[in-house]
Length: 196
Image 1 (cartoon, rainbow, N blue to C red):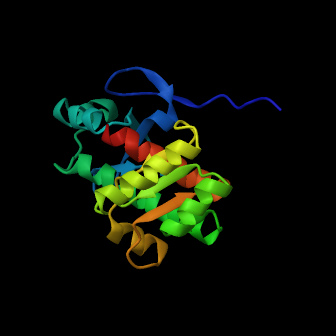
Image 2 (cartoon, helix red, strand yellow):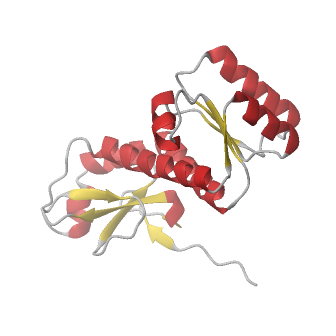
Image 3 (cartoon, rainbow, N blue to C red):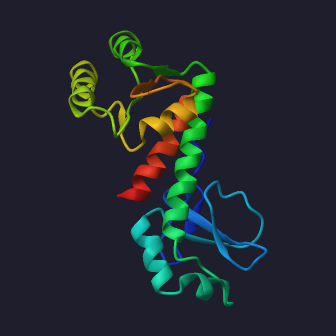
């Protein structure tokens, strides 16, 4: 079976053609306001911008949305933050689905066991957890696994992880291979790329 070619779209800011996973789509709401369509599923004509907070900010400054849609549109001052929050919400939802599918380990002991026995595809550490605890877990994962074989997700708080995963005080978690975990990993990569 042949690999599917990625769907390409043009960034309205840079004019470069890129795969859609490297872009963020924006659409016009019924109120004539530009809103992020992070899953690229909304109906209507969209404006594609490189998946970067800096690119979205520049598109705002240069009035790219009105130019691309050839009409005056309303754009909120907090659009850069709206995109971040939408990407974060999708990631947290995907982590919850990975947990339900049995593809997410929660707690230091389970994560250590996962690193030693089955391997992991992502190590999740709450950004407000104790630094030495996070560093020990990262060090263990790097010692046991190839450093490029797993992603470090360290940009969510313990409160966010606890709410998404239905447990209290989540500091350490890990994704193990599976369809739901891979979906969460892709969402984490998109959020990380946006925040670079």
